[in-house]
Image (cartoon, rainbow, N blue to C red; front, side, top):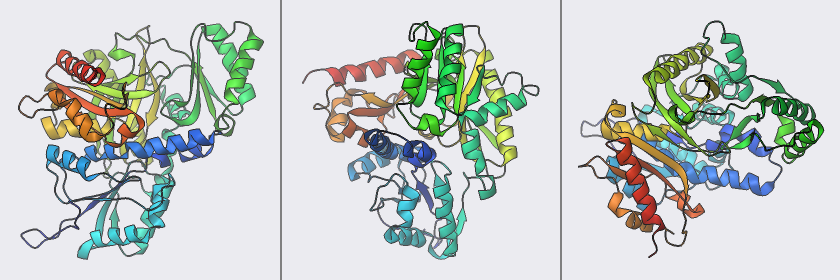
Length: 467
C-alpha cells in the first residue's frame, strides 16, 4: 500500500491519480483575515483534521497517491482498504503544514520527486484537488515545467479559474441569479443586496430586521458557519439605533467583515416538513463540458447554520421539490460549464414556509457530501438512492472523550452497528483524526429511513453508555 506503482502482468504501467486535500485553500483569504489568531489556527487545523475523510471519495479506485496535510495512520488505511479493496495506495504528507498545502508541496523536494516518480516512463499524471485554488494552479504549472503531462479533469483551465471564487462566493451566485431571473424564474434567492463596509451593513441589516423580524448577513466566502450571522425574531433590540449598534459591534469582532463584500438578505423561516427545510443537489461537470446530476439530499445543519452532514434517498423529499431542485441545478450547471468551470459543485436551498424554494449558495468544489456519494456508489451502485437510505455526520461531538480516545476504541465501542456487507446496513467511520478533537465522522446505511435512524440512535447509545 505504501510502495510505488508497479507494472501489471502485461508489463504496462498504470497511470497514477494524485489527490491533494487542500480544503483550507478554498477560503484562504477568509482564514487569513480572521482577527483571532487562535480561531485562525483552529480553522486550519480542523480542515487538516478532516483530510483523511477525503480518502472515501476514492472508494474502490486503484493507483492513488493521496497527499494530505496530516498523515493517515496505517490502522486507518487498513480499515479503509478492508472496506473497499483499493490496491496500490500511497499516502504522503509534506514536512511543513502551513494551511496552504500546495505551497508546502512545492517547498518539499522529497514529495516533488515522489510525484515525478509516480509519473513513471509515461510522464503522465492525473492530478485532482479538493478545490481548484490559485495555489493548486501554481503547483500544476511547476509540475508541467518538469516535463510532465498533467491532466486535471476536475479543474477549469487557468483562464477560467475565476469561476471557482466567483460562483462560489455569496455575491457571485447572487449576481448570476439576478441575471438569470427571466430565463429561469425558479432560480430565486432571498431578497437582499451587497454592501462593502460594516457601518452601512449594520444600518441596512437593522432596517431589514425590524421590518421582517429577521435578517441574515454573510461574508462573501465563509466556511463551516464562520462568516454567517442569522438573527431571528427576538434576537435584537426593537429600537433601530440599538439594533444597528448591536449588529455593528458583532461585525467589528472579525476583520473579514470589513475586508470582503457583505451580503444582507431576508431571513427565510424554513419549513422542516419540506426536505428538512434545507435541500441540496450536487453535480459534476466533466472536462468535455458534460454535466452529470449526482444526487439530491437533505442538509443536516445547526440553528446557527453550521453544516453537519446529509441525508440521501430517493424519498427524502416530494417528487415536485426534487424535480425543481434538479431542474434549477441543471440550469446553474449550464451557466457554470459555459463559463469554463469543471469539477464538482452543489447548490444549497432553503424551503420557505410559503412553499417557495430559495437558492442560498453554491459550493464550487468537492463538498461535505462528495465522499458520502462515492461510498454509496461503491457499495450499492449508481442507483443507490433507490436501494438504501444514507445519513452522514462529519463532526459528531463525543459525549465522553476519554471513552473513545483512539480509532481502535471507537471501532470496538460501536462494533454492534458497524457496516455489514451481508445486510447492507450499519456505520462506516469516515475519519480517524477527528477523534483527536473529540468528534466522530460517520456514514450510516439502512434499508429505510427508519432503520438508518435506528442504527444512528443505537450508535449514539453505545457511545454514551458508561463502561
